[in-house]
Length: 260
Ligand SMILES: *[C@@H]1O[C@H](CO)[C@@H](O)[C@H](O)[C@H]1NC(C)=O
Ligand SMILES: *[C@@H]1O[C@H](CO)[C@@H](O)[C@H](O)[C@H]1NC(C)=O
Ligand SMILES: *[C@@H]1O[C@H](CO)[C@@H](O)[C@H](O)[C@H]1NC(C)=O
Ligand SMILES: *[C@@H]1O[C@H](CO)[C@@H](O)[C@H](O)[C@H]1NC(C)=O
Ligand SMILES: *[C@@H]1O[C@H](CO)[C@@H](O)[C@H](O)[C@H]1NC(C)=O
Ligand SMILES: *[C@@H]1O[C@H](CO)[C@@H](O)[C@H](O)[C@H]1NC(C)=O
Ligand SMILES: *[C@@H]1O[C@H](CO)[C@@H](O)[C@H](O)[C@H]1NC(C)=O
Ligand SMILES: *[C@@H]1O[C@H](CO)[C@@H](O)[C@H](O)[C@H]1NC(C)=O
Ligand SMILES: *[C@@H]1O[C@H](CO)[C@@H](O)[C@H](O)[C@H]1NC(C)=O
Image 1 (tube, rainbow, N blue to C red):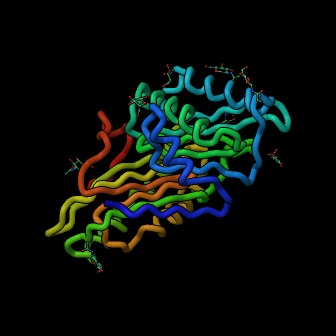
Image 2: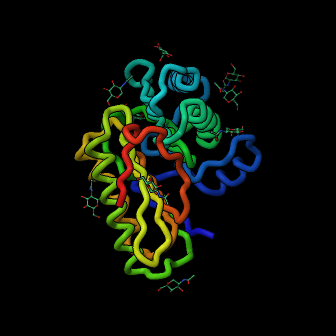
């Protein structure tokens, strides 16, 4: 069991609709999504609508991108659409494409006429808007989940988790590049189970913005003493568990993990 908490500065159309539609849908459901109404809505078959469809189908048919980061735009002037898709740093290109593809299908079903929307799966995130979203650090809308189960030794657990996440944050922000800003690692304290963590920013962020995003995101779940947690924003996300939920890179140079 987990608590799900959503917060936003934008207004959004949400939950009841989400439950009804996701049951009828063939796609696996998102962890969470927002249909944002701040940027307004489009009408069926408008130029914006067709641009969005072109952009999303181009996104899913692109087989050249093998580093898990999609940022594309399409259209002119007020009908221009911007999209960002990012997969968790350990996800292989084929699975990433499938995840992004599923996101384009589901997000357009769930948000049939909002110009801006965002959805998160376990392994990828997709968002689009009529405003330029490249290189912008945004921590809203966000959601987080925390497992109800407490760690055995809460104080020690929080300490180890803080160290792990700040370590991973430093690595993702500093040694990430414009294709990937991701770090995964584990940490074990005396008398404690191992904590496995992953942090990631969209790689269009600067090192400073990536760092700021992760620090702000982690502040939502820090010191809870819960054995499992997750927080996701448009620009970055963090997840930790008491089991390994990500693939280790095949070469250590690939995606550095700290040995603590
Ligand atoms: C997005 O569309 C809304 C109207 O639907 C408009 O008010 C807003 O200015 C547009 N944003 C941009 C950046 O064009
Ligand atoms: C939009 O286009 C589709 C196919 O071209 C058509 O079936 C549908 O009726 C149109 N919807 C509106 C509101 O015009
Ligand atoms: C679609 O993607 C291809 C690469 O797969 C790219 O060359 C082309 O410019 C894209 N078109 C649009 C409309 O984004
Ligand atoms: C995409 O959805 C299909 C079902 O429509 C599912 O079998 C597949 O595992 C999904 N892909 C990912 C990466 O979750
Ligand atoms: C994307 O998903 C749709 C529906 O699940 C499927 O029909 C289509 O073949 C998929 N496209 C790609 C490129 O995987
Ligand atoms: C976890 O710890 C909190 C505060 O120490 C306590 O109120 C709560 O009942 C505990 N939850 C469980 C599931 O043990
Ligand atoms: C990781 O944490 C250890 C202490 O827990 C610290 O000595 C080390 O410098 C950290 N590494 C990074 C890259 O932050
Ligand atoms: C992708 O994002 C970068 C910034 O990280 C930007 O310079 C580039 O123009 C974007 N790509 C497209 C196709 O817009
Ligand atoms: C923890 O991560 C290191 C890589 O930094 C890895 O070698 C080790 O096997 C991991 N430990 C566990 C228990 O998964």
